[in-house]
Image (tube, rainbow, N blue to C red):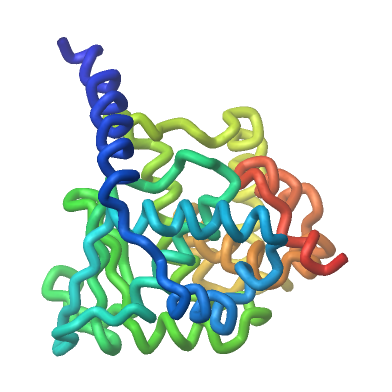
Length: 253
């Protein structure tokens, strides 16, 4: 029976999607305007891909629960649209990937205190409970400059994406190209050592903490500074293109 569980989970997700299409959250004209004015990734897509983006975003918004914390009593359309759009952006290379394990998004107004780590956080991912947490103020700071390689939304979704690839019971595991993933991992160790030793890198210091932080910071730069990343490390950039099945440099052509 254990081996049948992933199959049942995948069938459940498929049936659930069918229900989602009947009762899915529809994006209004006003909400599309939020994408057109606030989300550069969407602005750069052609009309066909914009329609695909909106379709996937509607499904994401149907599947995810957005919950205010720390004084946020009502989650606004802007919050749902921009956080949901970030999930779609990071996963846009796949038609079906939607990170089902992470079904709840908690939104704090500012940095928040964690009783577990005894410190203040800007955001985090909790795989045990399937939760992504963001500070709304820090999330918005990440959108203000889309070329500085610092974006909290991308950072936390990158953590969720990496974890989802390793979860074996929801029909979405091992979606990374295995050869590209192995080749990427071989490059990570030397880069982390370079950062720890204070040598020049386009990735900020926190990328040197561990391979999980490295991946999250790498994706921030992949989406926000693609040409600079490519010039710095073309092999690693090329492997991320294979892993994410998209190349943000096409925006620059």
